[in-house]
Length: 334
Image 1 (spheres, helix red, strand yellow):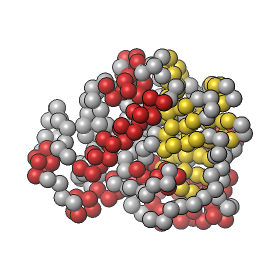
Image 2: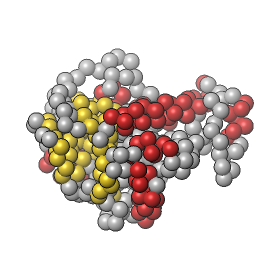
Image 3: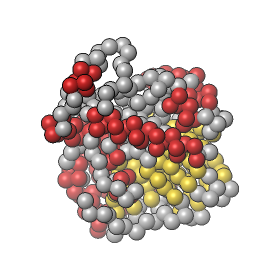
Image 4: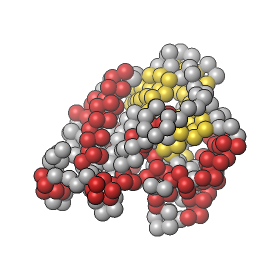
């Protein structure tokens, strides 16, 4: 792959993507550093339990194991961690799970949240039932390791000359989404603004678009529309709205790091051709998190069928697959 060279509008704020779809997992985990504070955004990571009727390939398990270590090392540096919402690819649970979340009882979560200031989505307002339950469980488990745990919706926190500003709760996708709400974050230091907009799916919401444009970020990392769900889980009209709103953003923001749901579709780039054209016409750039980090894209989930065909798992791994209906599942043999 040719290295993507673009002018980085963020020279004073250091942004380090740690895990994402372009890294081979489901995540948007990112470390943001200024001279005043280090913030770990959305310290979660997951795999799709089934895609193309197949469980994760051994390559995916090897990748999530490696990136779990990367996130833990970044958490050691950070004073603050955030939780935009309570899906497990955005925060780390405390139960043992070697299929989706690669977590070891409470130890994995403790590594991320211990002695941290945790700024999280409000657990009582604008939250759906499943996330409310997960939030309650987090407070009782991983959250108990935190130095402080505070609802962040609509609030601003100041660290020296750095501000960390959270949006009001916005829709996880369309305005009538059954998936609940998320909070976006803006890190500002000496006139530079990095915006973190996870799971907005485009955005599909006009209110979310308005908040992003009003924030005037120098650089934004956002979750694009879930192209792979079009026509059966997500209405095509909603995807089109998300793409049109994304066109508005790439015209306004010098550099967009496009991630998450959009990249789960093998043909995401061709389906977003107009978005890339709008960015180019404005002299702006679109990168994946991997490209921003100077790495090659590693799209594993969308190529899971291909992975199984080209690199068949061992007989031991195939035997392990047969245990997936068990209540307790051991680590896969890799």
